[in-house]
Length: 104
Image 1 (cartoon, rainbow, N blue to C red):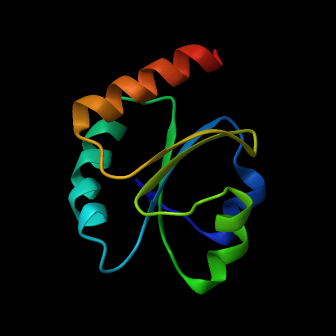
Image 2: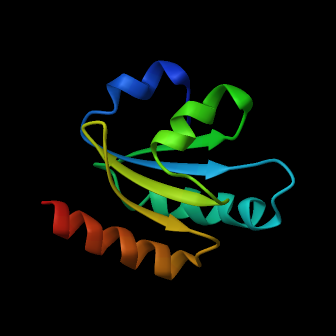
Image 3: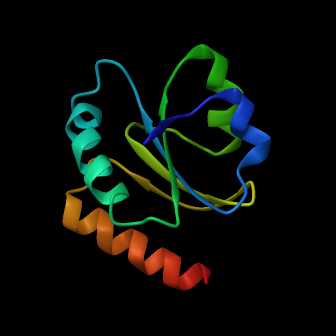
């Protein structure tokens, strides 16, 4: 999983999953391994981790991130869906599978 940076905002072409996390968020810490495991199963999807900082506030507002953790599915710079809160690996994988089928 690659670290997200502001340079990527206008380059989110193709299918992207952004894991939005924050310092001091217990659910976020628990989901890091979950997202890493799930990312191994989706080779045609770009996975990023975004640690919330003040410099990302505009991005977070634009993509309506209101709680942590949040998983965003973005295709060609457009938000397709979001998942909020801790998700077990099996649930996250099923959700992503369903969304990818829906998108394609």
